[in-house]
Image (cartoon, rainbow, N blue to C red):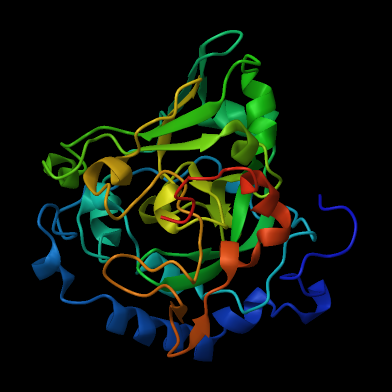
Length: 328
Protein backbone atom coordinates (compact mmCIF):
# COMPACT_ATOMS: atom_id res chain seq x y z
CA UNK A 1 0.00 0.00 0.00
CA UNK A 2 1.19 3.52 -0.74
CA UNK A 3 2.22 5.54 2.29
CA UNK A 4 2.30 9.32 2.62
CA UNK A 5 0.66 11.85 0.33
CA UNK A 6 -1.44 10.50 -2.54
CA UNK A 7 0.42 10.28 -5.87
CA UNK A 8 -0.31 12.89 -8.53
CA UNK A 9 -2.32 10.46 -10.66
CA UNK A 10 -4.68 9.36 -7.91
CA UNK A 11 -8.18 10.65 -7.23
CA UNK A 12 -10.45 9.89 -4.27
CA UNK A 13 -12.26 6.57 -4.53
CA UNK A 14 -15.53 8.50 -4.29
CA UNK A 15 -14.71 10.17 -7.62
CA UNK A 16 -13.82 7.00 -9.48
CA UNK A 17 -16.54 6.11 -11.94
CA UNK A 18 -18.27 2.90 -10.76
CA UNK A 19 -17.81 -0.09 -13.02
CA UNK A 20 -21.58 -0.52 -13.18
CA UNK A 21 -21.84 2.78 -15.06
CA UNK A 22 -19.77 1.27 -17.83
CA UNK A 23 -21.57 -2.02 -17.95
CA UNK A 24 -25.13 -0.76 -18.15
CA UNK A 25 -27.04 -1.19 -21.37
CA UNK A 26 -26.10 2.11 -22.98
CA UNK A 27 -22.42 1.74 -22.23
CA UNK A 28 -22.43 -1.86 -23.33
CA UNK A 29 -23.90 -0.96 -26.71
CA UNK A 30 -21.41 1.86 -27.10
CA UNK A 31 -18.56 -0.44 -26.17
CA UNK A 32 -19.68 -3.10 -28.60
CA UNK A 33 -19.87 -0.54 -31.40
CA UNK A 34 -16.42 0.72 -30.51
CA UNK A 35 -15.00 -2.77 -30.47
CA UNK A 36 -16.42 -3.47 -33.92
CA UNK A 37 -14.86 -0.28 -35.27
CA UNK A 38 -11.51 -1.00 -33.68
CA UNK A 39 -11.28 -4.63 -34.74
CA UNK A 40 -10.31 -4.04 -38.39
CA UNK A 41 -10.61 -6.49 -41.20
CA UNK A 42 -7.51 -7.52 -39.36
CA UNK A 43 -7.19 -10.97 -40.77
CA UNK A 44 -5.70 -9.30 -43.83
CA UNK A 45 -3.09 -7.59 -41.67
CA UNK A 46 -1.77 -10.74 -39.99
CA UNK A 47 1.28 -12.48 -41.37
CA UNK A 48 0.89 -15.57 -39.18
CA UNK A 49 -2.16 -16.52 -37.15
CA UNK A 50 -5.31 -15.09 -38.64
CA UNK A 51 -7.24 -14.65 -35.41
CA UNK A 52 -10.07 -16.84 -36.76
CA UNK A 53 -10.11 -20.63 -36.49
CA UNK A 54 -12.18 -23.54 -35.29
CA UNK A 55 -11.61 -23.67 -31.55
CA UNK A 56 -12.27 -26.67 -29.35
CA UNK A 57 -14.23 -25.69 -26.23
CA UNK A 58 -12.07 -25.31 -23.12
CA UNK A 59 -13.28 -25.96 -19.56
CA UNK A 60 -14.06 -22.92 -17.39
CA UNK A 61 -11.34 -21.42 -15.23
CA UNK A 62 -11.43 -23.24 -11.87
CA UNK A 63 -10.29 -20.09 -10.04
CA UNK A 64 -13.53 -18.26 -10.87
CA UNK A 65 -14.79 -18.62 -7.30
CA UNK A 66 -11.96 -16.39 -6.03
CA UNK A 67 -13.32 -13.32 -7.84
CA UNK A 68 -14.21 -10.55 -7.41
CA UNK A 69 -11.44 -9.76 -4.93
CA UNK A 70 -11.05 -6.83 -2.57
CA UNK A 71 -9.86 -3.62 -4.19
CA UNK A 72 -6.71 -1.95 -2.87
CA UNK A 73 -7.81 1.71 -2.54
CA UNK A 74 -4.24 2.98 -2.89
CA UNK A 75 -4.34 2.32 -6.65
CA UNK A 76 -6.97 4.29 -8.52
CA UNK A 77 -7.38 6.28 -11.72
CA UNK A 78 -7.62 9.74 -13.21
CA UNK A 79 -9.98 8.53 -15.96
CA UNK A 80 -12.84 6.08 -16.47
CA UNK A 81 -12.23 2.35 -16.67
CA UNK A 82 -12.20 1.06 -20.24
CA UNK A 83 -15.42 -0.94 -20.75
CA UNK A 84 -14.78 -4.67 -20.64
CA UNK A 85 -16.14 -5.43 -24.15
CA UNK A 86 -13.61 -3.00 -25.64
CA UNK A 87 -10.74 -4.62 -23.79
CA UNK A 88 -11.83 -8.13 -24.74
CA UNK A 89 -11.95 -7.22 -28.44
CA UNK A 90 -8.73 -5.26 -28.91
CA UNK A 91 -5.66 -7.26 -27.96
CA UNK A 92 -1.99 -7.54 -28.82
CA UNK A 93 -1.07 -11.21 -28.42
CA UNK A 94 1.36 -12.04 -31.21
CA UNK A 95 1.35 -15.72 -30.32
CA UNK A 96 -2.09 -15.81 -31.94
CA UNK A 97 -1.43 -13.39 -34.80
CA UNK A 98 -0.47 -9.84 -35.62
CA UNK A 99 -3.97 -8.37 -35.72
CA UNK A 100 -5.90 -7.03 -32.72
CA UNK A 101 -8.71 -9.45 -33.53
CA UNK A 102 -7.29 -12.58 -31.89
CA UNK A 103 -9.89 -13.17 -29.17
CA UNK A 104 -11.49 -16.16 -30.90
CA UNK A 105 -8.17 -17.81 -31.71
CA UNK A 106 -6.93 -17.35 -28.14
CA UNK A 107 -9.79 -19.47 -26.80
CA UNK A 108 -7.80 -22.52 -27.95
CA UNK A 109 -5.23 -21.90 -25.22
CA UNK A 110 -5.50 -24.59 -22.50
CA UNK A 111 -5.01 -22.89 -19.11
CA UNK A 112 -5.16 -26.01 -16.90
CA UNK A 113 -2.97 -27.68 -15.94
CA UNK A 114 -0.75 -24.59 -15.75
CA UNK A 115 2.49 -24.48 -13.83
CA UNK A 116 5.13 -21.81 -13.37
CA UNK A 117 8.78 -22.77 -13.16
CA UNK A 118 10.84 -20.72 -10.69
CA UNK A 119 14.55 -21.07 -11.31
CA UNK A 120 17.93 -19.56 -11.87
CA UNK A 121 19.55 -17.81 -8.93
CA UNK A 122 17.12 -18.94 -6.24
CA UNK A 123 17.52 -20.85 -2.99
CA UNK A 124 15.52 -23.76 -4.40
CA UNK A 125 14.30 -24.17 -7.99
CA UNK A 126 10.72 -25.42 -8.09
CA UNK A 127 7.51 -25.52 -10.05
CA UNK A 128 4.10 -24.43 -8.76
CA UNK A 129 0.61 -24.80 -10.17
CA UNK A 130 -1.27 -21.56 -10.69
CA UNK A 131 -4.09 -22.58 -8.33
CA UNK A 132 -1.61 -23.42 -5.57
CA UNK A 133 0.05 -20.04 -6.11
CA UNK A 134 -3.30 -18.27 -5.72
CA UNK A 135 -3.87 -20.08 -2.43
CA UNK A 136 -0.51 -18.97 -1.06
CA UNK A 137 -0.62 -15.42 -2.46
CA UNK A 138 -4.29 -14.33 -2.54
CA UNK A 139 -5.05 -11.71 -5.21
CA UNK A 140 -6.19 -8.11 -4.75
CA UNK A 141 -7.68 -5.62 -7.23
CA UNK A 142 -5.92 -2.49 -8.51
CA UNK A 143 -6.94 0.16 -11.03
CA UNK A 144 -4.14 0.87 -13.52
CA UNK A 145 -3.66 2.88 -16.69
CA UNK A 146 -1.70 1.29 -19.53
CA UNK A 147 0.02 2.86 -22.52
CA UNK A 148 0.92 0.96 -25.69
CA UNK A 149 3.98 1.85 -27.73
CA UNK A 150 1.50 2.12 -30.64
CA UNK A 151 0.19 5.28 -28.90
CA UNK A 152 -3.14 4.00 -27.60
CA UNK A 153 -4.12 3.63 -23.96
CA UNK A 154 -6.53 1.76 -21.68
CA UNK A 155 -7.53 1.80 -18.02
CA UNK A 156 -8.73 -1.30 -16.26
CA UNK A 157 -9.27 -3.13 -12.97
CA UNK A 158 -6.63 -5.84 -12.64
CA UNK A 159 -6.78 -8.55 -10.02
CA UNK A 160 -3.58 -10.27 -9.06
CA UNK A 161 -0.46 -10.53 -6.93
CA UNK A 162 2.00 -7.73 -6.13
CA UNK A 163 5.17 -8.88 -7.83
CA UNK A 164 7.29 -8.02 -4.81
CA UNK A 165 5.28 -10.66 -2.90
CA UNK A 166 5.97 -13.21 -5.63
CA UNK A 167 9.69 -12.35 -5.56
CA UNK A 168 9.75 -12.89 -1.80
CA UNK A 169 7.95 -16.23 -2.33
CA UNK A 170 10.54 -17.26 -4.96
CA UNK A 171 13.45 -16.54 -2.56
CA UNK A 172 16.09 -15.30 -5.02
CA UNK A 173 19.76 -15.08 -4.07
CA UNK A 174 21.14 -11.69 -3.15
CA UNK A 175 23.34 -11.80 -6.24
CA UNK A 176 20.35 -11.86 -8.62
CA UNK A 177 19.98 -8.63 -10.59
CA UNK A 178 17.22 -9.40 -13.10
CA UNK A 179 13.96 -11.33 -13.38
CA UNK A 180 13.32 -13.07 -16.71
CA UNK A 181 9.72 -14.00 -17.59
CA UNK A 182 8.71 -16.26 -20.45
CA UNK A 183 5.41 -17.24 -21.99
CA UNK A 184 4.31 -20.69 -23.19
CA UNK A 185 5.59 -22.29 -26.39
CA UNK A 186 2.94 -24.24 -28.29
CA UNK A 187 2.71 -23.44 -32.03
CA UNK A 188 0.11 -26.19 -32.47
CA UNK A 189 -2.28 -23.99 -30.48
CA UNK A 190 -0.77 -20.54 -31.07
CA UNK A 191 0.10 -20.53 -34.75
CA UNK A 192 1.58 -17.04 -34.52
CA UNK A 193 4.55 -18.78 -32.96
CA UNK A 194 5.31 -20.20 -36.40
CA UNK A 195 6.48 -16.75 -37.44
CA UNK A 196 10.25 -16.62 -38.07
CA UNK A 197 10.20 -12.86 -37.40
CA UNK A 198 10.35 -13.31 -33.62
CA UNK A 199 12.55 -15.23 -31.22
CA UNK A 200 9.97 -17.40 -29.45
CA UNK A 201 8.98 -17.93 -26.72
CA UNK A 202 8.12 -14.37 -25.72
CA UNK A 203 10.79 -13.27 -23.23
CA UNK A 204 10.73 -10.19 -21.03
CA UNK A 205 12.76 -8.91 -18.11
CA UNK A 206 12.88 -6.46 -15.23
CA UNK A 207 15.59 -5.46 -12.82
CA UNK A 208 15.14 -6.65 -9.27
CA UNK A 209 14.41 -3.04 -8.26
CA UNK A 210 11.66 -2.79 -10.88
CA UNK A 211 10.21 -6.18 -9.99
CA UNK A 212 9.97 -5.26 -6.31
CA UNK A 213 8.55 -1.79 -6.92
CA UNK A 214 5.09 -1.33 -5.39
CA UNK A 215 3.48 -0.96 -8.83
CA UNK A 216 4.79 -4.14 -10.49
CA UNK A 217 1.91 -6.62 -10.60
CA UNK A 218 1.24 -10.18 -11.72
CA UNK A 219 -2.33 -10.08 -12.99
CA UNK A 220 -4.49 -13.19 -12.72
CA UNK A 221 -7.86 -11.52 -13.31
CA UNK A 222 -9.63 -8.43 -14.59
CA UNK A 223 -13.10 -6.94 -14.28
CA UNK A 224 -13.84 -9.07 -11.23
CA UNK A 225 -13.22 -12.44 -12.88
CA UNK A 226 -10.29 -14.61 -14.03
CA UNK A 227 -8.24 -13.29 -16.92
CA UNK A 228 -9.65 -13.87 -20.36
CA UNK A 229 -7.37 -15.91 -22.58
CA UNK A 230 -6.83 -13.06 -25.03
CA UNK A 231 -5.63 -10.89 -22.13
CA UNK A 232 -2.91 -13.35 -21.11
CA UNK A 233 -4.56 -16.00 -18.95
CA UNK A 234 -3.91 -17.38 -16.47
CA UNK A 235 -1.13 -15.00 -15.30
CA UNK A 236 0.61 -12.04 -16.91
CA UNK A 237 2.78 -9.09 -16.00
CA UNK A 238 1.41 -5.55 -15.58
CA UNK A 239 3.95 -2.71 -15.24
CA UNK A 240 1.95 0.48 -15.80
CA UNK A 241 4.87 2.92 -16.15
CA UNK A 242 6.25 1.04 -19.16
CA UNK A 243 4.98 0.48 -22.68
CA UNK A 244 2.65 -2.46 -22.88
CA UNK A 245 4.98 -4.81 -24.78
CA UNK A 246 6.92 -5.24 -21.51
CA UNK A 247 3.89 -6.95 -19.96
CA UNK A 248 4.47 -10.56 -20.99
CA UNK A 249 1.36 -12.74 -21.09
CA UNK A 250 0.60 -16.35 -20.11
CA UNK A 251 3.75 -16.77 -18.01
CA UNK A 252 5.22 -20.26 -17.55
CA UNK A 253 8.74 -19.41 -16.37
CA UNK A 254 10.26 -16.92 -13.92
CA UNK A 255 14.06 -17.01 -13.73
CA UNK A 256 16.43 -14.92 -11.63
CA UNK A 257 19.82 -14.04 -13.11
CA UNK A 258 22.74 -11.64 -12.85
CA UNK A 259 22.76 -10.99 -16.62
CA UNK A 260 20.45 -8.63 -18.46
CA UNK A 261 18.16 -10.72 -20.70
CA UNK A 262 17.60 -10.12 -24.39
CA UNK A 263 13.88 -9.55 -24.70
CA UNK A 264 11.68 -10.49 -27.66
CA UNK A 265 11.06 -6.99 -29.01
CA UNK A 266 14.59 -5.83 -28.28
CA UNK A 267 15.84 -8.78 -30.35
CA UNK A 268 13.32 -8.33 -33.15
CA UNK A 269 13.82 -4.57 -33.57
CA UNK A 270 16.83 -3.24 -31.65
CA UNK A 271 16.60 0.08 -33.47
CA UNK A 272 13.05 0.63 -32.23
CA UNK A 273 12.67 -1.25 -28.92
CA UNK A 274 14.97 -1.37 -25.93
CA UNK A 275 15.15 -3.16 -22.63
CA UNK A 276 13.75 -0.34 -20.46
CA UNK A 277 10.71 0.82 -22.47
CA UNK A 278 9.63 3.52 -20.00
CA UNK A 279 6.93 5.88 -21.26
CA UNK A 280 8.17 9.34 -22.26
CA UNK A 281 6.20 11.78 -24.44
CA UNK A 282 9.40 13.60 -25.44
CA UNK A 283 11.05 10.53 -26.98
CA UNK A 284 9.36 9.51 -30.23
CA UNK A 285 9.31 6.03 -31.64
CA UNK A 286 11.40 6.06 -34.83
CA UNK A 287 8.17 5.93 -36.87
CA UNK A 288 5.70 8.02 -34.85
CA UNK A 289 5.33 10.56 -32.08
CA UNK A 290 4.64 9.52 -28.48
CA UNK A 291 3.45 12.98 -27.39
CA UNK A 292 -0.25 12.03 -27.52
CA UNK A 293 -2.21 8.89 -26.80
CA UNK A 294 -5.53 7.65 -28.18
CA UNK A 295 -7.93 6.38 -25.53
CA UNK A 296 -9.33 3.08 -26.74
CA UNK A 297 -13.12 2.99 -27.00
CA UNK A 298 -13.48 6.75 -27.37
CA UNK A 299 -12.48 9.42 -29.89
CA UNK A 300 -10.46 11.15 -27.18
CA UNK A 301 -6.73 11.92 -27.30
CA UNK A 302 -4.71 12.91 -24.26
CA UNK A 303 -1.19 14.21 -23.72
CA UNK A 304 1.15 11.36 -22.82
CA UNK A 305 2.61 11.61 -19.31
CA UNK A 306 6.21 10.81 -18.38
CA UNK A 307 6.33 7.30 -16.91
CA UNK A 308 2.62 7.18 -17.83
CA UNK A 309 1.94 9.39 -14.80
CA UNK A 310 3.62 7.09 -12.28
CA UNK A 311 6.86 9.02 -11.96
CA UNK A 312 6.51 9.60 -8.22
CA UNK A 313 6.71 5.85 -7.71
CA UNK A 314 9.39 4.90 -10.24
CA UNK A 315 11.55 7.82 -11.40
CA UNK A 316 14.15 7.20 -8.69
CA UNK A 317 14.80 3.75 -10.13
CA UNK A 318 16.57 5.38 -13.08
CA UNK A 319 18.20 8.52 -11.68
CA UNK A 320 21.80 7.24 -11.89
CA UNK A 321 21.60 5.43 -15.23
CA UNK A 322 23.59 7.72 -17.49
CA UNK A 323 24.01 6.53 -21.04
CA UNK A 324 21.07 4.13 -20.91
CA UNK A 325 18.24 4.42 -23.43
CA UNK A 326 15.57 4.40 -20.75
CA UNK A 327 12.57 5.28 -22.87
CA UNK A 328 12.89 3.09 -25.95
